[in-house]
Amino acid sequence: MNDHLVILIRSFSAFFILMIIGRILGKQTLSNMNFHEFVTAVILGAMAANFAFNEKIEVIHLLIALSVFTITSYVLAKLFLKFRSFKMWTEGTPTVLIEGGLILEDNLKKNNMTLDSLNQQLREKDIFNVEEVEYALLEINGKLSAQKKKELQAVTLKDLQLNAGNAPQFPIELVIDGQLLHGNLDSNHISESWMNSQLKARGKKLEDVFYAVKGSNGQLYVDDYKDNIQHPIDME
Image 1 (cartoon, rainbow, N blue to C red):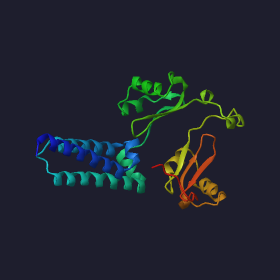
Image 2 (spheres, rainbow, N blue to C red):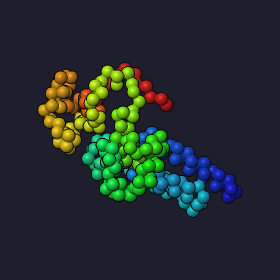
Image 3 (cartoon, rainbow, N blue to C red):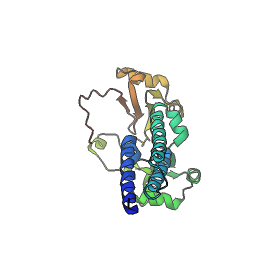
Image 4 (cartoon, one colour):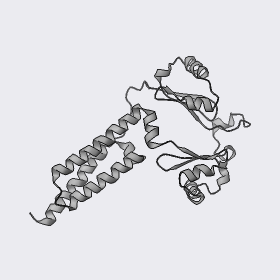
């Protein structure tokens, strides 16, 4: 068979194999790539590229190698859903770079991030003055999340009904996947009994709660495992 035709067929095959793997691993891999997903993507891409141009690589060897990395990535993703502590150990946690309007220089250094880089990412969010920022977090995917100071935030109808004198508060996660985040409770002087009473007032138990966060307005937001939606929408 003509060498050019062989390379053409192998290239198309590699492309469609990666398409299938991407479908298996899911949308999260494409949107917010974390450490293990980044490593997997680099390796899978390199293997597929080699298969397309290196005729010495046998198809069966490629399929075995791709299967190993695909299954490993898939299993890790499932473990992250089941064990949050394992996820935090492998991927790390978001880092606070600005708190209460103050830049945390030590956290910048820990993440090998310069002030120029911080300002660049803020400008990408249409924030050209660091003094406008109340909180800024470096997410585990390397992206920056920023919250402007209260007086600079866009006003909504709900804001007009709130007491303007209330100091802004950063949202506090209290429950994830049915588990109390005791570290967040302790660091923010929130008692477990208060949390239980809030859930009891809503007729809920801890094991029913998928996610609970104390919002910037001081109110508790609770999301159950059961959403009671008959036909959830998923855009395919």
